[in-house]
Image (cartoon, rainbow, N blue to C red; front, top):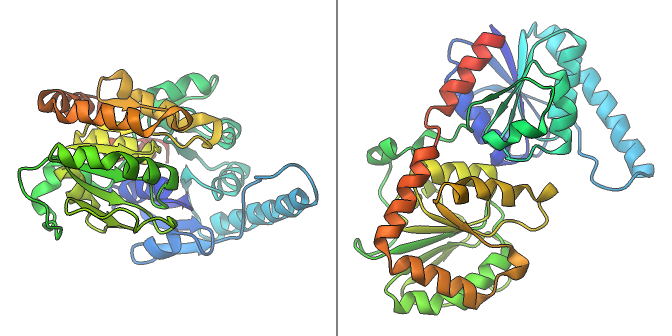
Length: 352
């Protein structure tokens, strides 16, 4: 069976698709992406990558929109030609700009399409495309109520296998000088960092140091004040390759609430403090966070209302209660879908 996977742009789209593809070793898989995006680095070593030029409609209607729609029409034609010439028998997409031309091209040829939506609130593009799909797999159960009239199946969101607790023994050791028995707060702002979160953390961290905690802070590469905090218990890194091992070591995680991050924390059974990106489309990060909050596994604070004093107090309260942190971790693990990649792969087998 020949399957085309259309996934592009960010790790949130690519990692679930890659994890699912690895479960489909009985399929011949090729990839459809966009030039100069993350897939050009991650995909070619495993799968043949085809790229077409397409972009999202981000601005108000105008001359720029006409150009984008023209590119979309060309992208649909190119995707259609690829599907025909490659004799593909179906499409799996996890979103990104590439989803629209892939879905429309596939359906114009009568091919089955599986779309995976990882967020608790599906975006406008997913809601539009969902009616063209054979089925929509959802990462969080609340997403189903926004897709009325569409066949949905809850699969969870596939994550990289190294985030599974069972994979801990296979990971390389940390190369960071963190004592074994100290509480560790991990701050993750996403792949690009989060300057506003970084500022809040630096204004709050002194009290955490006094409480005995160490802090590892993934700052991203766009923070002009990255050198402003120095302390023996503070490690600032723009990125860190061995993130799975670091996440397993953490006592508490402070993070944005992208679907991938929320899912990885549940899989790794980690308590969290979420500060959702306030500009996220339709506030979807806040609703992603609510899935773990409702389970008793996390706290969530809206960034405009969060002060250093509140963050300091809430984190100290958790640090002073190791039992509560442990319970939050257990509750996160209780709602994790640990076999999500297998579930999505099986859904592909049923549809394609």
